[in-house]
Length: 379
Image (cartoon, rainbow, N blue to C red):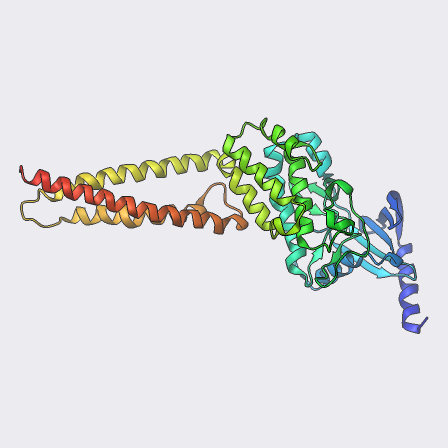
């Protein structure tokens, strides 16, 4: 062993002695997980991973990113990450919270549970896929590896996470929790970011129905109990089926795409009361303004001088410019703000609406002019 390697090894042993084991949280052929305490700095989780298995590198990459000052709010802080002769040791701050499994048991399965946490989970996974190059694939997404603390999601347990290797045909190791792992994780093909999308699809089904099985027929029966409109039930089932397709090419291309599709389906039911009231007021303003514009158009034809009065121009401005602008700006002032992942999609919908708005607005103008001409003949 070279001198610098010996120094690193001895330093690692010294650091390990500074932590005292509170209890063992888990043990497997991969390694052990312990809750440890430090005399001056509270509780931590220590992972000791067998280096011979070639796993655990994700801890090193996340640790390096955190040391560089990159904000990773969905991941517990890794305070130390080092190697001994046989093991990789990662020490992370202990997050005081409950697993998604326990939260689901306490709060109940259904739309509310999925709506509250699924977006945060997808954003955490998306960070692994997009921040690191090559992408990090978690490969063990399940409720027990998601910790909820004061409403905030933390992703834990990167023991079997690995870098994506586009040129490889299969994974060299087959790990993961069976019900959440995609077929390719058992040697059928190479795992990539769509493998995590599969696991997220099963996780979403679990949040909605309480089932972690790949069982679309059972999902359909459970979704029917959520008091959703028939169209929403079918759309939501389609989202689950696509996310968990056996062929990776048929799945959503990213975690954020899956998240966006899910929230588009449930958005009508999850809009806040204040937002509903605001939308109702806006629709009422649109209708009333349209009616006012129609009557003002008729009135302008009765102007003895044959000119368009000032109030006509004001009405035209409101109808064609002010109301559309307010409608487009609604996402910025909505009491229940849209997630960043949904914003582009929502704006696309609003753009389509505006095309319809102008088309119908021109129709209103046309009708107004015709009526004005007809009525003008009798004035």
